[in-house]
Length: 126
Image (cartoon, rainbow, N blue to C red; front, side):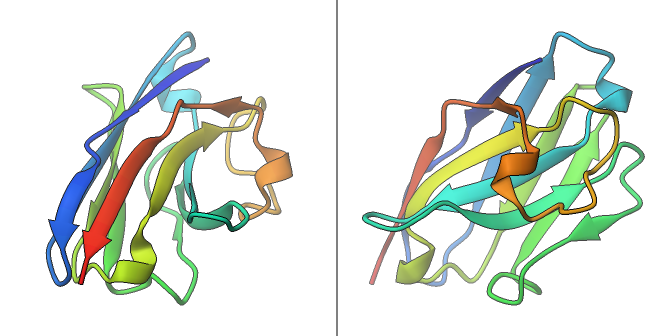
């Protein structure tokens, strides 16, 4: 599975950004996707995940109600819509997918994911 993340950039606090993750190499409808982020000088952390049919989504409390993950199986992409951005959302954002179909039980554990995109930087200015 190859993943390509895009859509990052510089945005002011309170603004919005939409990230996209294009997947290839396997039937897209069998690929679960998660987003992680790595703030400067910090560890990579879970941001959102979506299962193969789009019906199950998970978010940590830090982004819930501000971030929305969705998938478009016709375009082989998963999007992460982010609104109400804060300076602490500044990070490199990565999309990831597990080797097995579906989301892992530990969906927020980065060690459960085998394939990673190259990352896209989101910078939120105050």
